[in-house]
Amino acid sequence: MSNTYGEWLREQRTAAGMTQQELADAAIMTRSHIAHIEAGRRIPSREDARRLDRVLDTGNVLTSFLPQKDVAVADYFEAARHLEQQATVIREFALSCVPGILQTEAYARAILRSGFAPLSDEECDRLVVTRLERAKVLAHRPLPVVWALLDEAVLRRPVGGPAVMADQLAHLVRLCEEGRVRIHVLPYELGAHPLMQGMLTLMWFEDQPPVAYSEGLQVGRVHDSPTVVERLQNAYHQALGDALPSKESLALLRATAKEHQRHA
Image 1 (cartoon, rainbow, N blue to C red):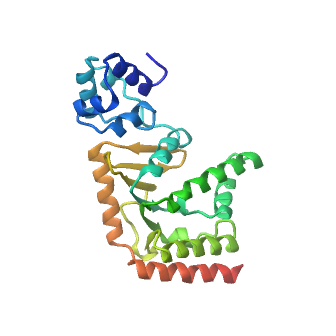
Image 2: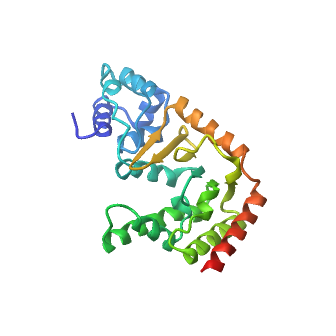
Image 3: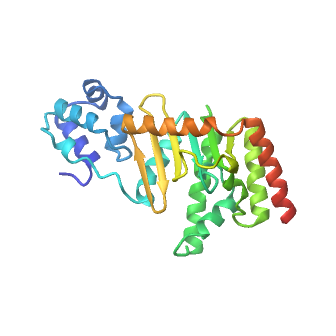
């Protein structure tokens, strides 16, 4: 068997004399979904793997050898990053820090510097550049529809110091004013809510099923099981229903930016 699941799938498809589109049609999937699996950016659901096994006459190999999805963020976020660039709708939830695609350079650098063990200057620079490249999704045409649901702690924590934080919040305000992002804030007084255990990104696409990416300390996962994705979407929508309206959220962003600026 080849080095990766995706490479082995490609070999079996080629041996069967099928194009990606022909395999997609036969397995009731999309061509882009097949392409992402072969490139190692997606893992098929168990139902998809069963259909691929049936179409390619591979017994239950593709079903039995589905890759383990619990892997380190550094390894698995690469797949999420590629999906992020293709999404037509992105909905972010952040519990403690501004989502990556919305970060300023100084804020991103402060976040990266806070990890253990400390990064070298060269490694930090490389990761900052990668993060800023991700933010270019907000300049693509057509623009993806981006919503960010932020716990109020994201606004209050002075990451990088008051000046960096004031500039970061001003950046969020500008993105909202330019219509590139819609932001809602979950206020402190709400108390417990269904997204308290980590960060979450929901993504929708033109020609493939939606996915979700969840992340905690040193662990992250891309979810493409329809049942799991729907459950995470429902949790997001429940929390969104308790958030401040966009106008009030924007006013809170402006006021908190001024507070940080005064401390600076």
